[in-house]
Amino acid sequence: MSQFFPAQPSYRQLRERFLKAATAVGASLSEYAHPLPGPFAEALFTDVAWIGAPDARKVLVALSGTHGVEGYYGSDCQSRWLESLKDRALPEGVAVLMIHLINPWGTAWMRRVNEDNLDQNRNYLDFNKPLPNNRAYQDVHAIYACEHLSGPLRDQADALFNAAIAEQGWSGLMSVVEAGQYEFADGLFYGGTGPSWSNRTLRSIVEKHLSGVDVAACFDLHTGAGDYGHPMLMSIVESAYPALDDAKALFGPWLFTLITGANQISETGVAATSTGYTSQMLLDALPGVHLMPFVIECGTYAGELVHGHLRDDHWLHLYGDPLDETGRRIKQGLLEQFYPTDPDWQEVVWVRTRQIWEKALAALPGINR
Image 1: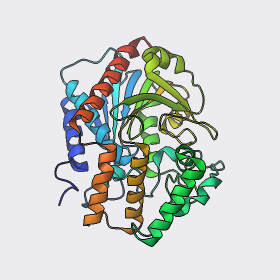
Image 2 (image 1 turned 90 degrees about the vertical axis):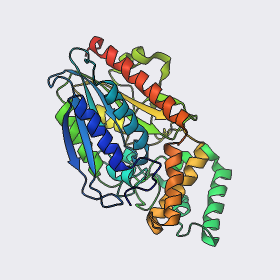
Image 3 (image 1 turned 60 degrees about the vertical axis):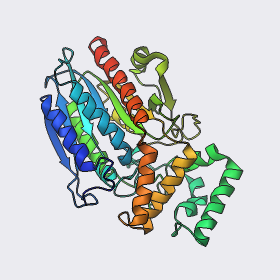
Image 4 (image 1 turned 135 degrees about the vertical axis):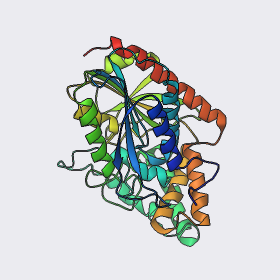
């Protein structure tokens, strides 16, 4: 057995296609080996491809797999775009940096989180400072720590879940749950107590490839939030940043700027109450770079449905077996939530992602610090 579902791509297939496409365009490649294997004992890697002149001062960055299972969309778009670049010249002075599956464990195991049950977009923090204290999560943690997928205990957890929704409303409850929490390692949206492997690896990649450039546009690729088949272009940050005006001028009304914080509310489906996002880490790590940090968030199914599948997958990795019949059923359901089998969905998100990248690539020569 080499993958969960024969009709769907596996981690290994994603990697092979990416490396083939990157090699065909003459990319300079490097790899970062993950310390743990995939579900079928396969070795796992984050791969990095630099396309263009080594001394390019302006860079378009595409990052996939922050949330592992969402890497199926991200990897597909990265490989497709690389394939389209094969016989083209990049603009003078511009390079492309592809960071493929920064959370390879999550992609291989079809999990949104990493090997430590950790949400990467709650982990990019300064762990020398006090961690965010999400006291309200304590009241609902039992919902997500239930030891049974069905039966009386699950019924009790569901009753607690429904009571919390009745009291706080769906958006109110999600503002608590999705804000991230740093107390319960067996809980949902756990942010960890130190930098994860993916966190450390991404910082190393950024330091190596971007610390000396002048201008960069980085696109972190995600799925799950928003209207079905609609790729939202966002900038998710804690405050306005120096290159924000250039980002707005480049994409105009397509760009939605989400300012995160303890009391922030968003109707996008993306959590505004959380901290530790990739975008903010990049800004903090690259103070000398005129950086435009973007997120492409491709909507799939209703938030309530997605959340239900996340609960089941969370149970599976706490108490079940991902490779038995129940585990495979849960995995198939979760993958559908973040990478729908609908070919129209897959085509629409690819076309829009390509449009965004092409627009940025053409504009980068004219953007200066």
